[in-house]
Image 1 (cartoon, rainbow over the protein chains, first blue to last red):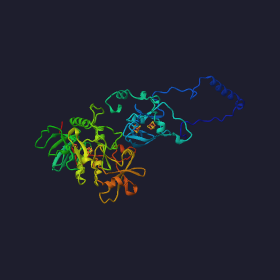
Image 2 (tube, protein in one colour):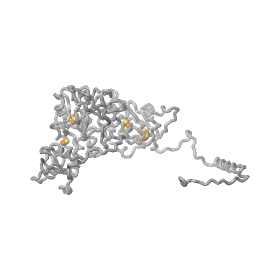
Image 3 (spheres, rainbow over the protein chains, first blue to last red):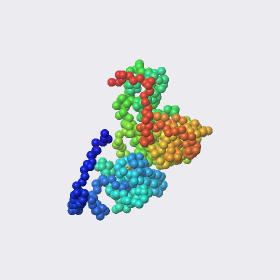
Image 4 (tube, rainbow over the protein chains, first blue to last red):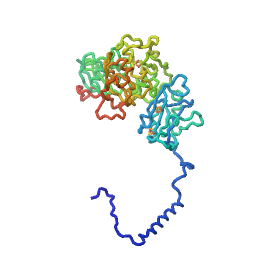
Length: 190
Length: 324
Ligand code: SF4
Ligand code: SF4
Ligand code: SF4
Ligand code: FES
């Protein structure tokens, strides 16, 4: 009786003299190798050559700032709630008077961490965010020597204040969102 | 005794019971939502109009319908009354409009607000609201103020249900805060921003259906759905000492009163229990609190038991509903 239908009867017949020499088999193998040397390669020389990425490729995250350079994230916790891998943690703090140019909302994330080893790059955090604060990007998470390095804090996630170094995410947004962002009366857009 | 039929369920209740209380006796989906009525507070209700229902037949003698929708929290039943709540499209349509009204001045800052996840207004607009706004004008804006050492008032979020005023009046001795001005200009305030220092003043946080009154000791500490609510009690000389402690690991982040299925406080607790006892050694933990399956707080806490409000077996479903 067999447990699966993948059993195979092994032939026990004695090998002929030629077969016992192995030489023909070796030449056949070498021939295949040689053929592949001249064939078109399936791999590329990363990082000198890069493959084109989709506009909505889901790579490492960025925490966005608004037009005035204030952090958008308000530590609402919805991304952490949506995250199936429980990769996101945060600690919130209250904005003090005089910090209005740093944080958009009364509450902000003083600590915001994503564990890139846990993350499955599903993008649910991006969909959950009500403040357009977190987006995935075309960038790939760098390799590290230690696991701790994969826990990305705000230092790695937050985009630079400098306008030229900002990360463009407009291609990731639906037409509805882009239209909504044009409405002048929405407090969201101020 | 009066026999009343609500959405096809018949029940017998004491004379003088309100339609809302009769509906709560039946239970289930037919209970109208409330934003201002609070069964524990005398005189509450009649402010928000979320509980509007249609009275299809006034009483056994008077078979005509009532001319307008009535607030079920403040309309007493009559014998033979026939009421429609969720079976009346008119009621549902009006409720939608009421939500729109309640949201006119509401800032919708749920991502910032500590009440998010256990907010009655959030639930109400989720269920009955529309997802767009027609309101172009500016909203009322107030500064955030401290009422006393423990309570923060975000007047922007207030829906003027007056529950906190009734609580201060009835639960604490001597109230110092109330509603100032009228109509569109109304706001909750204390007498010259007097601090409320009374043993039971913290209960205004629990009765507030929105995030207008929040706990300063819990302010921005966490989100309710990251915490684990546990029933706990302690020997308290001032109150019953029965509370819910909201834990994260071994830390108690906040303490609230226990609330029933209609989000009403079962036993009001004192400020010492609420604000000062935040160490596990202060409390005897009884076990996890039952949270309704539909609540975001129950996310990832799987529970086989069927929970939530179910129809009381006493209520009889009549085969042919009176309304056609
Ligand atoms: S991409 Fe998915 S797994 Fe990664 S942090 Fe966001 S929600 Fe979590
Ligand atoms: S990134 Fe967005 S969803 Fe996550 S906490 Fe910040 S505002 Fe909320
Ligand atoms: S502060 Fe809260 S409880 Fe008081 S009237 Fe406003 S919404 Fe109601
Ligand atoms: S609950 Fe009846 S009017 Fe507010």
